[in-house]
Length: 207
Ligand code: TMP
Image 1 (cartoon, rainbow, N blue to C red):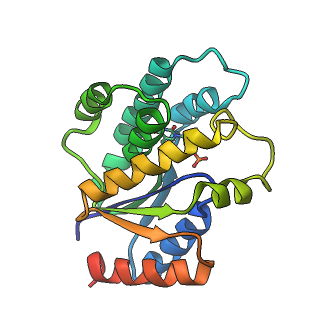
Image 2: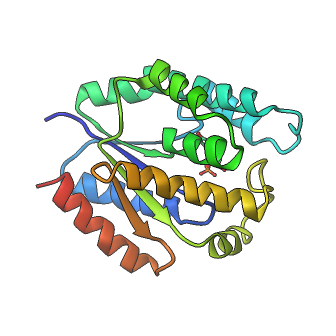
């Protein structure tokens, strides 16, 4: 049976980690071998790039350098981990992927879409997720939930307007590819969020 590539996306405080655990457990119960991973990161080298990208002391990092590092980490992750796993028939569950770049670097930072498009084609023109779960919620609520966490990283310190643009860009991406995306209202309680995801997984992937 071929592997599948599922990505989880959403703004701050959307509850991706909890949902990821549930999805992985459910798929494993269905007999799938699951690789759980994340971006930026997922391999030793890509995790080093993640440290640079998230370090709040790196204030000088330019928008273009940020974009290139995101795709450098992604290229490494794809070659070292994602593509081999899919080739083995494993299911890859990835916390963020290129839609995050469209949302954060494209929407949030306002970087040119041609640049993102060119890098996407270069790095994984042949590969897109089979399903993308977008956990959507109002920015106010997301930031309120995220504020309970430890010290903010370089992205978490951004403005309300930045996250508003991130949310809008995510929703635009979802509207442009309804066959791949499923938008989940993540402002509800976990059980309701999970109930919807469960139906989506059953209908779209495991039948
Ligand atoms: P996380 O907090 O979900 O682990 O993600 C790390 C941060 O990296 C998050 O604030 C979003 C950001 N990010 C981007 O800006 N562009 C990307 O392409 C990815 C994958 C993450």
